[in-house]
Image 1 (spheres, rainbow, N blue to C red):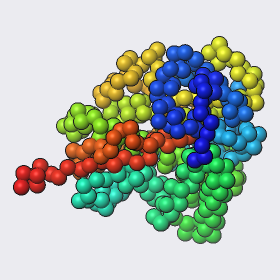
Image 2: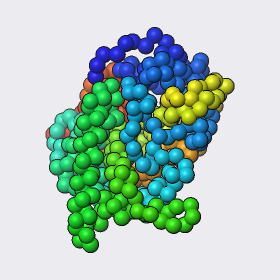
Image 3: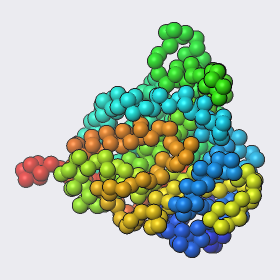
Length: 413
């Protein structure tokens, strides 16, 4: 990533694409939440950053004022951001018909049926690193699991996995400050899904029963009750959205869970001893280490939390900050594995709440359970300060080297 001018004041000159933000955003957000709940910067052609739970919730639900047609803030002018990712970049009333057509593929029933496949993938990934003294929880496992799961859902060969990873990084990370990388990744992704749709179309009734075929045949129900097939742009855009949403957020969450447990032996021991806590623990990990900060486009001059914001600019909704707001959560800066009241915003809020939340939760449950059964003891193999974090709308550790002690009976021998 190109070197960026240092931030002079996070309240008036924030830069969410900086290495400092990637490493220290929880601390930065906590300070802004107290001192300047709606920050501003002249970077990115002028942008805002909203940090309090109440304000984020209100803005996320007001799609008329704060449009979803742009969901990232990068160095490109907002007038030049034209990546179409339905349904996420659609506002009501266009948004609902497209989203509803896709939801059945991510229902609790459909997701639960997929769990044995996810478990088998997780087991195989761990088989591939069996016997190693050090396993990278991010590169060898967390970043592999959702890629293979999405490949399975798309019905494509495993060999496409490295391309999925490269395209995801190119759009959500490296491409945010290098627009050529972003354009290349977007073009290649669109070309890939266009070719897959052609193949399903050519196969006719013999097309495989996978997510690409589902999107090819999807129909949106209009308000008057009529239905229409997706346009080709909607099909490609929807598949593009499902790839990005199904990979990066999940791998970032699973990676940071393993990082936390590798540096908090008491939490690790408790989860190993009490596996029934894993569902509540996953929710708490999602709250405490929320990976996603989403953007909105401001349609018209408005006000957030008493602060005026200008139409034609973009703003960031810092869901990680909302999830540590002391006005909403008790002991917000403590990770409590059995926290009971945990209505977090890790999956967003309002009509654009994450469509794949059931799938993400299941992958995290299965991925964590499988890892702990295989490796009930492990610890971070580098200093915590040496961990690098991804830059962009999805924050997670890029690498998590974990030392795997030999089994106790082998050590005694």
